[in-house]
Every structure is written in structure tokens, then in C-alpha cells.
Amino acid sequence: MTNNDYSSKSILITGGLGFIGSNLAERLVDLGGEVTLLDCSLPGSGANLHNISEFRDSVSLVEGDIRDRRVVDSVVVGKDVVFNLGAQVDHKLAMRDPALDADINCRGHLNVLEACRTLAPNSHVIFPGSRMPYGRLKPEDLPVKETHPLSPLDMYSIHKVTGEAYMRMYHDQHGLDTTVLRLTNPFGPRAQVTNPAYCVVNWMVRQAMEGKPLKIFGDGVQRRDFVYIGDVVDAMVIAGLHPSAKGETFNIGSGVATPFRDMVHIISEQNGDNPVECVEWPANYKAVETGDFAADVSKARRVLGWSAKTSLQEGLEITRKFYESNRSHYFI
Image (cartoon, rainbow, N blue to C red; front, side, top):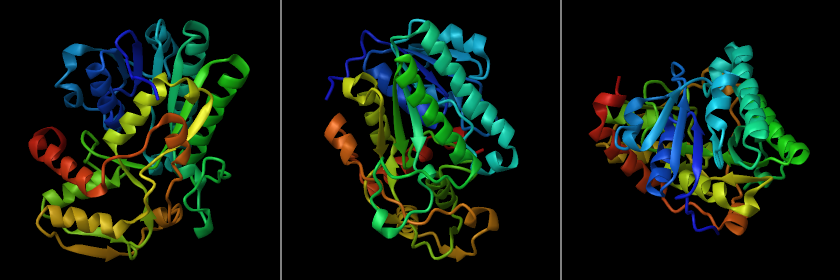
């Protein structure tokens, strides 16, 4: 395990105003890193200037799009670690407009990798993969290992797989240090809560805080691997400096398969026992429902010395308190 000393490191975070990027930026600032954030504030992406309000003076913020190669070139130069988090993250939008999703989630990532190859060849690029490309799994597949075949069900997942393939190719063919972290279902402070298009856990927290019924699709017995954002940030920070992470892919999750309805009931109890309702699956959700999921995180534990530390109940309570203190900036 590395000592996580970022005091001499120059760092770029694309998508730095988003949920994961802003939480990561705060941690890297605390660790002494020289942090640059690149974000285009794509509508609906969750980018929020308030996400960095507590440490705004400690980072450099560049407004720009990963699809603009000139901008990407300008911010990549001299970087030691690049966390390439900029993305289009709405699964339904990716199905409605696959060309847009490909433009951002494929061509945009190629721009970052090409810029690193030519202008920062000694940098280490970290890319957030997803658990979605694993597709529908059989009970005997769980917990799923990184070596399991990928079978994406929707356009977003296909482009995630493509992004991973880019990362491997740039490592194998160009010698660029790259790492893929396949995130399960992250939740926690700073995620957008204006729509349920992504980060459904945070959306449920908002519904509960506003006294609304919490609606579960189907019977809610489908299991998910929920991981708190603080633990995700831990993994990213470790991977960014760990020599054994280079060229590798890791599952990053809690390793625990929790029924969706159990997560919802915890949120209900923490917010005064909101009513919980089971409703029919919408057709566009049911078509891409993957069923039960839990990640095998033994590789991350063995190689990186990382494992999730925050329980679902503890993480949800921290999340609730964050939004209670920041309602005006997120409940819009």
C-alpha cells in the first residue's frame, strides 16, 4: 500500500465539479496535491459549483469539455495523475441519443488519453468503469470477479466497455500507465438529487427528506452492491500512486449484496418512517435491469490494500445530514 503522499503531485480531475470528482478533489487537497479541475457543467450531469465551495481557493478550475482537444491539451501538460471522470452519465439519455453518448464517453476519453500520451507520457490515468457492463448474472456468478465476461445491455454500458478497452490499449501499445476501477453503486454527499436518472440512492434520500412515499420497482428483492463515496475516493487515491495498479482493472464495491428494499427501508427509518410503495417496473427500466449483483473485491484488497469501511446505514446517515445542511444548493 502506498503512503498516499500527493504533496509533490500535479493532478487533473476531469468532471471535477461532479459527484465523484468533487469528493475526490477535496481529499486530494487535504493530501497536499496541486489540483486542477476540468468541467463543462453539462446540463443534468450533477456539476455544481457548491460542491467545491469549501476548498475553492485551493484548486484551479478550468471550464471546458473533454471533447475539445485544445482545452484538454492545455490542462494535461505536466500532470502526474489524471483522474478521467468527465462523462455523460444518464443511461436513458444514452439510449435516446447514442451518438451524443459516444461523442462524450468515447471520443472525449480518447482526447484525454491522446493528450496524456503526447504531452504527459509519465502520467497515471485512472478511469471509473462500472458494474453495468457485466450485464445479467447468474446466482453462481456472484460475487463477480473482474475476469467475468462483459455483456452490456445498454448503450451507456457499451461505451463504458469501450472506454476500458481504450485504457488497456494505451497501456499495452503506448506504455501509458492506466488503471480501471469498476464502481458498483456509489452514493453519498454532493451527488445530484434533481432526478433519478442516476444515483438512485441519493434520489431516495431526497424523496424521504421531503416526506414523499418511496417507490420501489417490482418487489425490491433485487440485490445491489452499494458503496459509500468516501470508500470510492479511498480507492482512487490509493490507485493513483500505487505501482501495482498500473495496467490493472479492479472492482470497487462494498462486496455486500443488499436487497434494494432493505436500502429503501433504512432511508425511510432515518427520515421518520416514510411510506414505502411497490410499483410496476417501467418498460425502459425493466429492459436493462441486471438482477442481483455483488462484486468480488478480493483483488483490490490483495493488490491495493483497499476495502470498503463504511456500512450502508452509516453512509446513508452521513448523506442525509449533508443534504439537511445544504438543501438550498441541491434541492432545486
